[in-house]
Length: 347
Ligand code: SF4
Image (tube, rainbow, N blue to C red; front, side, top):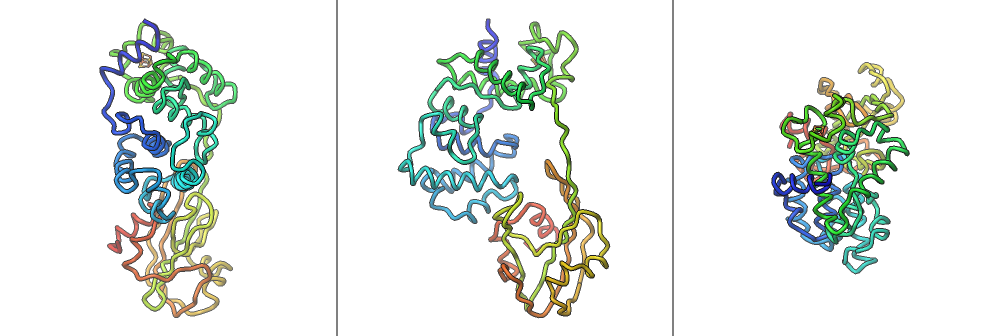
């Protein structure tokens, strides 16, 4: 039996029942693929269900406001995915009359869609012969065929893509692609795969050469950036000051006015800083409480955050909305803020 037939055979016996699997609807497939980028199925599933329930079609999603989409996405992280999803939904309605494109190159041009997602949509929805290559596929191919080329190098990317394309059974592209991804996700797992019950074991290079833990190989080391956030929960005349982020990972989300430092800084230094003076313009402030430091880990950065509870006379900050305390839950906010506000019973 060929490599792909063995994988498909395993898939028919072991696949999970997932809502987007029973559908050929390109909107549902696109939505699930965007949600599942950088996200595990168990974490993404409730978000997929929420989105389908609120926006059953691409036209419904296009009609939503960006705030509504970000609010529904809140907690899933990588918010550019949500912004692109919304932008693309509007584009599909405007440019393609609400009908999802059927051709690979057109799909690839949609914002937020790369080669992996375009291949997934084309193969799952239309059974077109485009091989998907995600982390699960790379891991399996690297171990089974003994490929030690770094998968994040340009040579590695080409090598894995070519091999996956060569292995694809063209008229079963939908099933073949889902099978290989599922095999990587459930059987050939990153840590401690259960090789003893693996149907590929006899011909698996890594297993037979004791290299399972060595493959796949990566070239770049992830650089983690440290950031120090001082969030100022400013209460002006019983109104809370919030600002919409204009850039960065949380673009489009709301937060409290922020002073950011690249190093750990004492409270006194912050109060004496230019940022503080610019914000409060020498007006009297009453610092009621400063939280302890909260560590928030993201893929590429570690955030150390403190929350300052401050009351002050009106200072009317620029680019700031003043809202009632209880209305904060209506706004899309980063998970870090949500967790803190839940902890202190504010939401
Ligand atoms: S034998 Fe182990 S390493 Fe090889 S394909 Fe199976 S699970 Fe992966």
